[in-house]
Length: 285
Image (cartoon, rainbow, N blue to C red; front, side, top):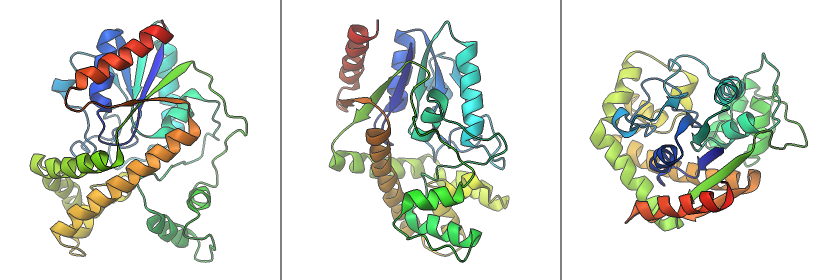
C-alpha cells in the first residue's frame, strides 16, 4: 500500500505521516523539494529526529545545499526505494506535487536534463530568470506555465499521464483564513527557533545555489543581509510568499491528482488521524 500525505504548507502533514507509518508499519519517503538538502532545517520545517519515532525516513538530508538536485534525480531515487521495498507499506509526505507525479506516474525525462518546478518563486522572479536566460524572451509575466516551460525547455511529459503505482492521495486542508494564520505564526516560530542564524551561515559562506535562491525563508533573508530590505520587511515577505505558495499547492493538487481531502482538527489532531485511518481501513484494506 502506498499512501501520499499532501496539502499546503502548515497543515500537519509530517505529524500525520508518522502516525500512518506507525499504524501500518510503513516507511516514509520525503516529497518536499527543499527537505532533500542538508542544513535547510528550520526554514523547511523539516522533521526532527525526536519526531520520527523510530520510523525509517528516506530522501531527507541527502544532498549538500550547493548541489543541484532535479525532479529527474528524485524520480530515480524514489523509484529505487519503491522497488527495494515492494513488500512494505510506504508513506510519501510533502507538498511538492511534481515530485510525486514524477515518482508515481509515467512521467518521462531525458537523463541529461535539468528540471525544476520553481514552486517557491513568484511570477516576477520567474520572469526575471527568463530574461536573464534570454533578454529577448517575450512571454507574459502572468503566464506562469510558459515561463516555467521556458526555463525547463528540456522537460518532456507524456500527454497521457497516468499512475504506474497504485497510490492513495490523502490531503489535509483547512479554511483559508486559518491556514494563513497558521503560516504567519509558523514563520514567527521559525525565527524563534533560529532561522536567522541558519540562513546567516549560508550567507557568510557565500553560498548562492539554486536551493538558496529559490527557497522561501532563505532568498528573503539574503535580501536582508544584502541590506536591500529590513528584517521586518523580510519577515513579512516570507509570510506573503509562504501564503502564495500554499495557494499554488492547492491549485496543483486539485488539478493534477485525485486527492481525498480531510479538514484538520487542530484542537485535537488525533481526530484527524483517526478519520484518515478509518477511511484507509474501509477503502484500502
